[in-house]
Amino acid sequence: MCRAEIIANNSVQEEIIDALEALIPDFLYTVIPVVHGKGKRDKKLGTTTWPELNFVLIAYVDDGNAAVVRSAIESVKERFPNEGIKLFMIPELA
Image (cartoon, rainbow, N blue to C red; front, side, top):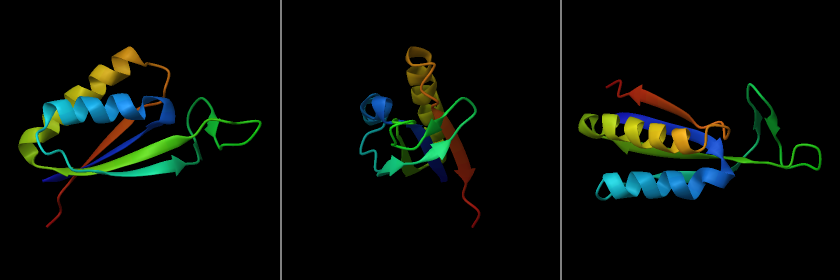
C-alpha cells in the first residue's frame, strides 16, 4: 500500500481524475480543491497578480496499482506539460 499525492494546476483536475478512475476500478481519493503555493516557474496564489490555483489529490493505492497511477499521471503530463503536475508516491511505513 502507498500514498499517492498529486499536486497540479486546477485546470487539469478533471483530466487527472478521469484518467485514474478509468484505469483503477473503485478508485478512492480525497481532493483538497484550493491550494496556494510556489513552484519552480511561478506562484499559484489566487490573487490578481498570481491568479491560478493548485489542487491536491490524495489516494491510498495497493502496490499493484502504483505503476498504474504513475502511468496515468505521465499520460496527463504529456498532454499538459506546462501545468506543473507532480506525483509523490509514499510507501506504507507500518
